[in-house]
Image (cartoon, rainbow, N blue to C red; front, side, top):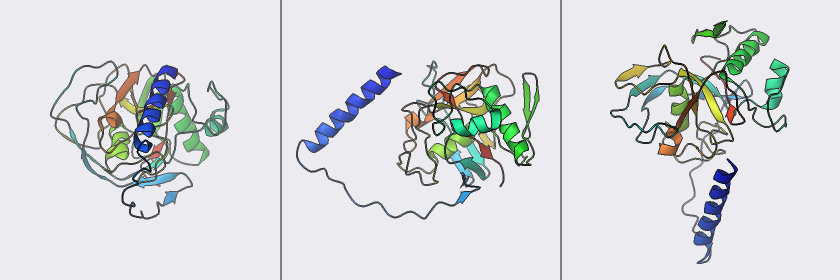
Length: 254
């Protein structure tokens, strides 16, 4: 990871040298002002429903060499996504522990397994008087996606929120107000990992079987206007938690 960030830093320096070697940088036309983003319950933004093409030529970047076409066409209902990943302080206030290696209450929590993320969602829902989304029986977890509690985003929801606006943005200028998707951690999603199916789907929740759960984005893999980097996928055993694994939460209704 340090090597990746080192390479990234060098590229930034070289890019800066190329821009400023000839004098002042051309800032280009001013960006139009955007309407203020409405925030719900202090930390959620509305992701308006819509239809998009999921996947892309480089959707499989981590251990997967296959390429497939056509990509699925997905239609999603409106949902609400947390502006940022769950922080260490938020996680500890609900779970009573902080598994993160580098401790700071304002940093995104890491070293979280998928099962821990699910448990966090249910505990948070109960603490707020909401209906828990998940029913947990050992390692068997089922989801009531219509419940009003907290949950992990489906893979389709995560990708749609990341790239569907189809505009270039940074971690501080997403048109829907999201932050940190190009952050330090990969983010757990609900779905089991599998190749994308072809066809048209409405509110897909992934395959019914599979040993691994999906992870999206992660270090340096941000959301760049339908860019292939934004569509990078990873997956791991849901019992695992490393310094690169975090999560954010969504709600179906507020």
